[in-house]
Image (cartoon, rainbow over all chains, first blue to last red; front, side, top):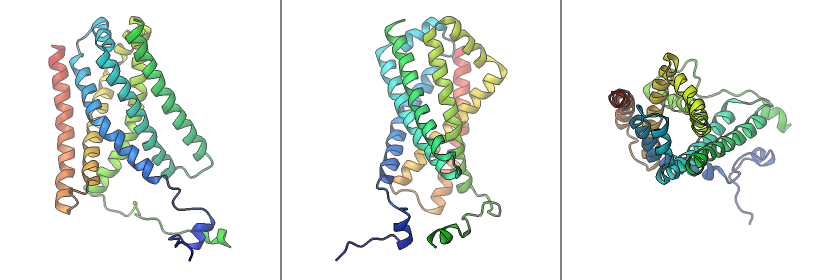
Length: 128
Length: 133
């Protein structure tokens, strides 16, 4: 006996249905969300605490190993979460030929921004 | 043949133009809109970090922009969007755990998200003013 396929014959022919990565997207969206709860609260609280700080004091805070570690984790989790979220928004609303180029540009942009942010932070930590 | 069947226009659901807004649907779209808005805030965060890494002059320019009237409005708006997305996101994580699906509970948690976001934004603003002296 052949294994039962739950898809309709039409769905099978045009290749719609499970591509076996839906759970991966869903799970990583939740995983990054759980990571972002403490990381963003830490970040917002730190920024509030530095409202009155001048450049030197602010850089001193950014240079500590704890801040650099948390900022790196924040940037990775934040831009991963952003990429997964914007992917769904583009897939839901863009149905023209621009869809795939937009998805590629968004993904690459998120990666570039995360790396740029991490580089800026490492420069503050190790060069300044 | 399969193609003509695919192209036949089918009704879309929900028909948002005749759909009465309710707390649940409004909070759902707000979570998505704040997510998109926070993507822009994330870009500003990276610009701000790069300015800080570049030196005092670049950092001062960014600080002046943030301290301006428009900068302050954007900052409070960003904080409100952040707290809405944070509280709404926690509500979603609770649902993912299989909890809180009763209609009454959904409305209580929904209004809880709105109240918590307003209060946290005010609290952040007051705390920031207090620190600034």
